[in-house]
Structure formats: structure tokens, C-alpha cells
Image (cartoon, rainbow, N blue to C red; front, top):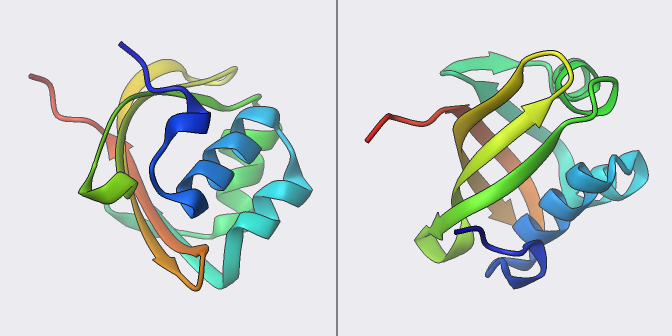
Length: 110
């Protein structure tokens, strides 16, 4: 079962996912707080470099399977043209209605 993007609980996370899935750089940047940060599989990454490589130039998109923590933790199938599909977890920190940090990585197997 998937959660439609428009039904995601947290408005900031919803804007982030919608922009990512639309490959809309301007909307994606607008969803982020100034100085936003991120990590991938536990290692801090340069947000601009990572999103260019893993999202925009590789057609990244996420299909949300479930949300918890008021919509600030998502389990999603993440797909891009480089790596194919993988089950991932995304944890968001939201400040002032914008995503100030996200941490992503492979989701634990059940």
C-alpha cells in the first residue's frame, strides 16, 4: 500500500516529496530551510551535490509506503536511474515550516 503524496501529514515533508517527485529544483529549494543539511546511510553529505547526483540528474522519485512521527518519518521505495529501486527510510527535521534536515538510508528489512 502506498500513501499518496497529497495525503502526507506534514506540510513541509509533503512539499519536499512533491518537489522531489516532480524533479522541480525551484520547488525543492523552496521546501528547504536556509542552511539545510542531510545525511545518507549515516554520513553527512553536501546537500547540493547529493541532490544533484541522487535526485535531479538521475530522475529520483519516492513512493511512500508509510509515515510515522507525525509524518516526519517515511518508509519509501526510492528509485533513480543510477541505482534502481530500494526500500529507504527518511527522517525529517522541520523548522518554521521548512525542512531543515533530512536523514535517509536503506530501510531495515522486516
